[in-house]
Image (cartoon, rainbow, N blue to C red):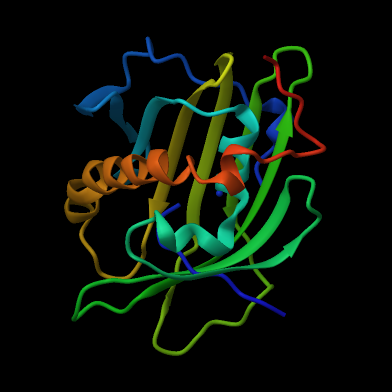
Length: 219
């Protein structure tokens, strides 16, 4: 059985999920670069902020879904990713994977097991991805800190032929003794770098020409 490795990037109830309006005053714009906007907001009961990133990519809907589902190759574009392998998938939008992220010395590297589910609204063409940490799948690994909180919600919206909007929201606690202010400090920088790299990798034929039986191209 294979295993996967990544750091901060959650199964919530997908069918009840609705994308949050950015007009919501709780979201604060932290940084904007090359068409990528990063927002954050405080979360009740937590010192670690919830983050959000929005961007438009010149890619088909299936291409965006394909690169997000291609967990094994996430180290190509996700920073601090050591290795990535899927544990289990139905090849229809459900994936369970194990992740390990690189942390600087003297901190221990982090690992996590995550379960993701993706579905498409057939009327609007919008794809929703939701993932969270899963327990009881892989034992705790000596020398690693197991991450127990990663919640992610992604909206992938077709805008026009060959253009897609990504609205990516994540809340994660790396655990251990890392102060919340330090986690918040590096959040926006890592997200922007990751998605800038993703916009280049999505041009590869394996993603650009992807055909997924469970995704209907709106345009």
